Amino acid sequence: MERCIEVPAEWESIARLIDFVDEVTGAMALSEEQDYVMRLVIEEIATNIIKYGYEDGIQGVIQLNCSNLRGPLHIIIRDRGHPFDPRECVEPDLCGDVQSRTIGGLGLFLVREFSDYLAYHHDAGSGWNELLVVKG
Amino acid sequence: MDVEQVGDVLVIKLPSRLDAVGVAAIENKLSETTAAHKGKALADMSGVDFVASLALRMLLTNLKAVQSLGGDLRLCGLQPQISEIFRKSRFDTLFKIYDDCQSALEGYAAE
Image 1 (cartoon, rainbow over the protein chains, first blue to last red):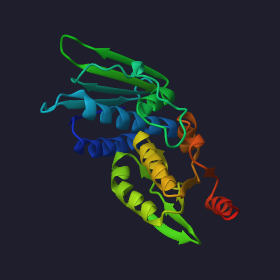
Image 2: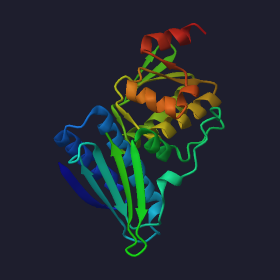
Image 3: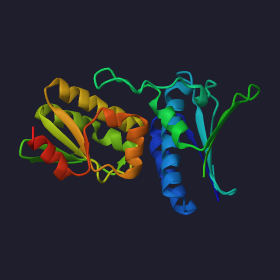
Image 4: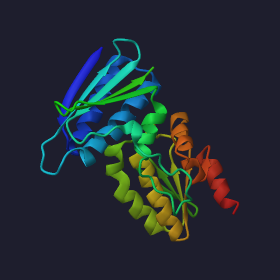
């Protein structure tokens, strides 16, 4: 099965994406782990695109495609904002105590930790970024 | 989000989905409630089946705030997938985490 959605890159779209995931996870009969990873990836990556992806004033979009046609769950997130490879994001500081601990970079760290495979491609010609996340 | 006081401990039952929408729905009430109480607080996470970085941020912000007022925020009842998130992010070193409410309340009472 394959499902896709396109939403504007704005905060109001997060609720729409979560509704979309609810539909998709029910229809695709995903495992609990795949369900969790799909929610994690969509929340962390979409939030990142909304926060940092597009210049202020630009009406950007986020495209999401979920498929398990080839067995494992494939999640593809596309946007045309600034190129950003989540695999190259700095490791978060996991060592501080309560008062000194910060959580910058934690979302992408969790995506990397819980996924089986991540691939990123920026197409300089069209400006599209594409992130593929696979979870078996 | 349900809140009840058990002795001197404020017990907060967190909702099942702590995704971006779930966090937005409770974060103000959670911080107001724990700040007003000042003392011992316990977040019952037995019903929580999703957290991401926004939820971790919310919990850490509340922990910092309540500790600076002389109190504490402890957690109980983490489901396996949530425990894994806490372990990988090392949030399990920041919070005192108990298997269930009863043992958390006993932990507070023993101090």
